[in-house]
Image 1 (cartoon, rainbow, N blue to C red):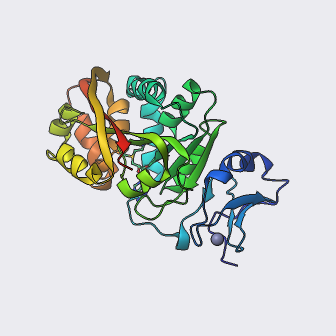
Image 2: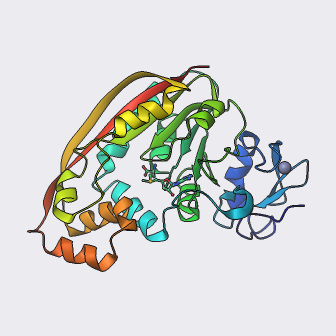
Length: 301
Ligand SMILES: C[S@@+](CC[C@H](N)C(=O)[O-])C[C@H]1O[C@@H](n2cnc3c(N)ncnc32)[C@H](O)[C@@H]1O
Ligand SMILES: [Zn+2]
């Protein structure tokens, strides 16, 4: 038996609540070692070969074979900042609403869950599930801190720690809609887990996104060729159906600015103190543009 990859969980009676959602989505998952079907027994997710994964006390299951991933998982501080920025009172709340409304509206009328790859806190997926009362959600992320939040984000959502660049621990064709919001995109795997007629919705920042802060605080810039690279990466597996941009200007105070910067890629480069100094040097609250592109794709298969 392979050692359990998850955070050590308690016995079934102690972890009944945390197991509930994994129990509801376990049939959508596949063993990362042998690709076999998984089931939940006594608080442990297992396959017929005996590979076993504890459900963490916080309600997610870790399906990373070997425990390591190939990306940069968000840290606890990044996840906490993301949670603030995406909250209903946060500066990105209108973005969450727009993405969720659009995702719910375009979800094709085929059987399947909504899968969010690089789901972070699960904020987007939770709002999509609010709008789609008959769907279940799968939140996949490399970060345990993110998975812990996502596991609590919605009653119909199961959270899984895994690596987007490896084979996803998800069965073929189980998703009606796959979401990728500011997250890594593994085109072959996204195509595999989508149901026939299923769709992929990709949300990426445009060059206007947070541009005032990028200039004033010296943040990581959006790659000018991002759209081109996205098209190239998806071209072999997906056809674009449509896309549109969505943007708005929002006043941000120091706390809002600290949250949107700390949750993003600049957090990996800029220390907390350097960021605080740069924010303090700004002349008060700033009006900042939030601006994204939403692109819909259908699998070529
Ligand atoms: C910019 S955040 C976006 C999170 C969420 N989609 C949102 O918009 O709030 C990118 C997310 O991708 C996750 N991530 C990075 N590398 C990954 C990988 N190789 N596999 C899965 N998730 C990964 C990070 O942990 C983080 O939660
Ligand atoms: Zn197995």
